[in-house]
Image 1 (tube, rainbow, N blue to C red):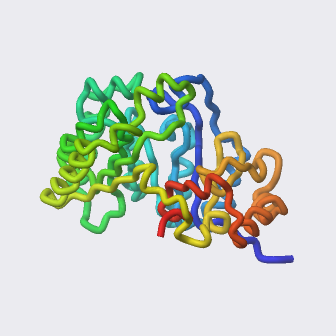
Image 2 (cartoon, helix red, strand yellow):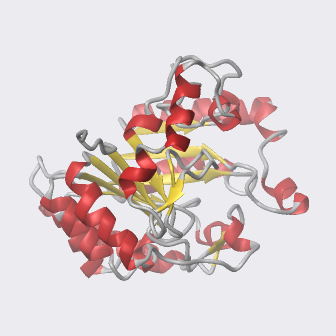
Length: 316
């Protein structure tokens, strides 16, 4: 007998279904999607959440489409687990907003433009006005919260060729909507056809002096407004690792809507499926332990060598 060891951080793709068809997402090119089974949901609630300190609800789908979201949030609140949900906010009505804020959730809105025409060009099926109306209720709640309330809201902007000139406007939009910060990430090559990718990529644009000046201007503007902006560009990722080890294989688990288990959303390797095996046999199994040994001796997975996450080996 040995004490069971559980991950401290849960990354859950509750569903791979989405109501948007964004240009930079595979959903725009394929129709797919499923939600976690009752078996996987039970494992998450009864076995994983009680041992976790942080839980992120995000994957290829829209988490607010998952019918059992309330049960997951309730369990997280019960065990005082820090919760982060990433959503396009189209379904973030008053009831869901209250549920999330009352549970102290950190709400991250994926919103790629503060301008209606650009937003709806990038986020196919998106309704800019509806999202803005939903955020109006957040502002009301924010103003009525105690200062030490854990709930907060931030914006994630995927920068591409269609919206990169709108950074200043997005800073103003974020401030006006009481966002804690703006996270700006570069569009990544996850679309399936080269023509679509060529229309979105910043590969050539970001090498221009105009682009570099725009980034510097946005940083200065944010400082003047005493607002936090974070950039995450592909070129920021170092070719050589800056850390010897990533703790994800020991402390982080990513569970797909299919029930597949990995250690990270960036690592494509699957170590088991919760519909077929219990969590302990996967988490402490031979396959995952071999992966941990490889990490420990410096034989890194190719995805790990190009990691965009702040706790990865490419970040110091």
